[in-house]
Length: 231
Image (cartoon, rainbow, N blue to C red; front, side):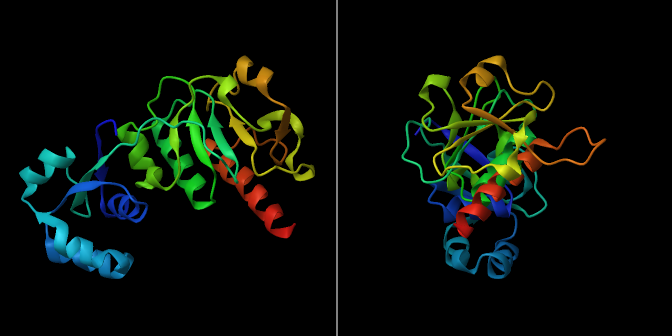
């Protein structure tokens, strides 16, 4: 493990616990309110919140979490070591120099929900930055998330997404594919384009210029999941 990260809010703590994170401490402003949230949204974790949550005042909460949160729930969790080679039965999402941490986190959330093999990135944004964790609602623990050391480390067919590519609706995405998406403003880097085995595009109505990064990743993974189920 390489230090600890802050989990802000009930849902982030819930997801981290469900996917095996080492979470300690769990702090709450009101133990009974936190238990009520668990009872309605995560009954599988009710005992955890009743037995392990530590009730604190606002100052104590801010001392752990750094700021307040509407749910009055927060925690610290161990950050896993950087992602190494993994055996995959689902596509890996590659974010090529993403710039918006909130979008990055939302991609992790979508990738977790659709069963991707992991999310890796190039560029300067820390995949475990607090704003990225905030966007993922704690789902960093549901799949491997980390920085890609080198493009040569990628295994599997690299499928890059760009408006000039062939239509995704005519393409099959293999289970071990790497799905590469460019940054929100500048698109794919030359290095990723050179590494790509093929380039595909998402269907888009004329006069619409682009999709949000998270929407693009969701569409690609849903396409993979839908046709995998049909095969």
